Amino acid sequence: MNRHIVLTLGRSGSNTLCDMLNQHPEVLNFGEVLGEWNQIRKVQRRLRLYRKSDTAYLDRVLLDPKFARFANMYRSTDKRRKNQPEAVKVFRNIETYGVKDFALNFERYGLRQYLKDRPQIKVIGLIRANVADRLVSTLMLGNTGVVAVRDDTADTDIQLHVEPPEFLRLLKAIDRENTLLSNMLNEIEADRLMVISYDDLFRDNDTRQKIMDDCFRFLDVHPIETRTRMKKILKKPISELIENYGDCIESIRGSQFEVYFAEDIEA
Image (cartoon, rainbow, N blue to C red; front, top):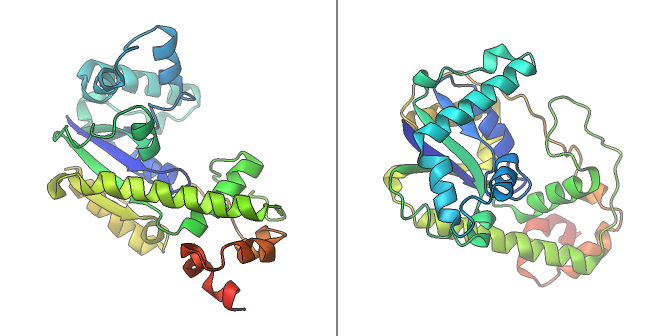
């Protein structure tokens, strides 16, 4: 069984990508395992396992075949409980197993070199280069608490007030995160790395399907047709979302971020 990881940042479309990966019967992909909020991390902390080594913990999660089998059993039980038998996977048919996690978590837990040092793990890098778009998505998450939606129920009437210094601070933080992710991906050998752009993934159905076909081939499984079951939370431009948008724009004049708001600054 091959191993892979989706390396990304928050608000970059990773839930959609992982959902489409898991539509393949030969691909098993789980969400984050390093963050303190997820269930497996909580169990590890509670049982005091690998207290001195997050490297050993991640090795167990990613590389131990017994853990992969257990994880699939746990997932299958959960899918049956939710009356989703079509999502249950036969373990012997799984060709590649992996997780999704954030570059920030690798840095936070001293695992900056982890993927570089493990040539047996394929890496799918998912990037959202536009810091303005990630900022808006981050603000929406903070306001609504909604990570992803599967229908058209997103609230389009929300308006946010963002203090101009906070607007600039968030842009700088997101830019630093993007740099971290790019640097980590640049350290991975080309033959075990595939990089996907958020803008391409969400461009249109044909482009998305081509990306998924390439992704499945990269993981050494046959391509299948996938469908997008998650919808974007944001449905209106940032200028309409932030009620004091003009003040925020003034705060970034002369900064490196002008390029992302060029039309509004020129106006």
